[in-house]
Length: 199
Image (cartoon, rainbow, N blue to C red; front, side):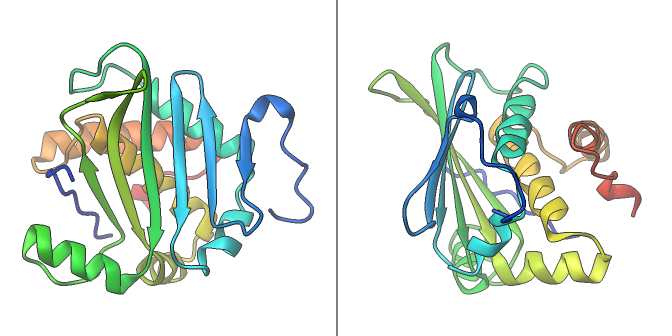
């Protein structure tokens, strides 16, 4: 699995409808939605329409839960101000990921997830932005197929991974990777998703 970090800022028809307490809404075209959690909100922009079907396999209450649990999973390794926090997830394609990877890391190759921690935590209307997470469609779908795992599981794993990067976690050193991988496996187990590092 090839997971990269950029440190520079910058419905399934059979699934039950989200309960009112889930605080999730989708635009009419399904390409943008917001998930609210206890300490803030996450916006999702689906730049590639192929993502729409993929997100239909994720129950919105599960998405809210895994985001909330990841944010609350322990003290972040960066100093996050008190107050509502926000972050954005941009679900894009391999061409876009190549461009970002080339521009910011001098590696013009597609990668599954790129995290851009904000680092400044500038307050805007009472909220603090953690940063942005970008996802590449083709490579994520291909990885799921090669590992013979549901795309839903792989996508949720990468969302957790990206959020942890925004909170200051890294995997450059072996001990850092162990901490991060153990935290990811524990969080994913809450949704009965097998440890992705044991596959």
